[in-house]
Length: 360
Image (tube, rainbow, N blue to C red; front, side, top):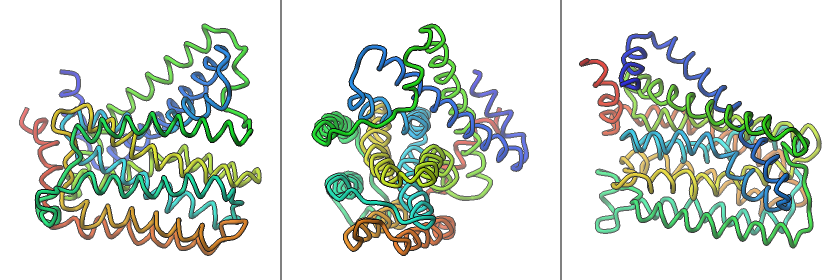
């Protein structure tokens, strides 16, 4: 009942107000996720878990919490395009925009062993998502009728997520590195305060997610574009803000290798965690409209391949030229998604989302 009233309220607002709501929801979402991560790290360290385990589990999963919450809620509410679009768009934004900006500001140092083993997993995860969405009974139909990520595939992704986390812990232990974790300074704080911060953070994530989804749906309907396109551009950019801030801070503190590692890990989790969890929670999985196969998936793969090639041709640092190339890919991709969506079947996805409120 409340969600219906909320949708009616937003339906009666101007597009400018909806954009403001969208921005506020994204800010609250980012703040809430930050509070969840720092509180969870503090709790994990109080329980004497090794930093390497906390970093590869709590921190990694926590940084993709905004994308996961938005995508899972969208899937549950019957908007698979928004759910999958957010996952794909976040990969494009993380790699194209965030790494592009970071590398353009300053050449980023490369830990060859890390970027080679993790980077190939990043590229493989992107291809795995596309392959899993192709309707293999009639592959060519993907360009006309689309495909989808089945519930079984989503569950398989979650199994691979567990395997990836365990592998990351193993690699981290072998490297012997002990990085500073956000929230580490709160490990000795009073337990009630840490738990309260965790509850507040989770509440902000949940409330802001419920605000963001209808605002994005109604804006998509008014713009005449699929929900998936709005999710892959505006929503993905907003939910990737934590990664952007982290990357810029890492560059400013001369820890550019952390920016690369953060983005690579986020891309893998956007496939295995965000898309996987979203597909697993609904019986029909996530549908992928033709727009995904015509534009979004190709753009995602191009950005990942450009980054992979950039690493291969770079020496000790990821050069500014690679950062500029990634930014160019992102700058071309964003308007391309909107321009090619005008005649897409996905336009119908946006309209029904707003229709219930309009008829009440």
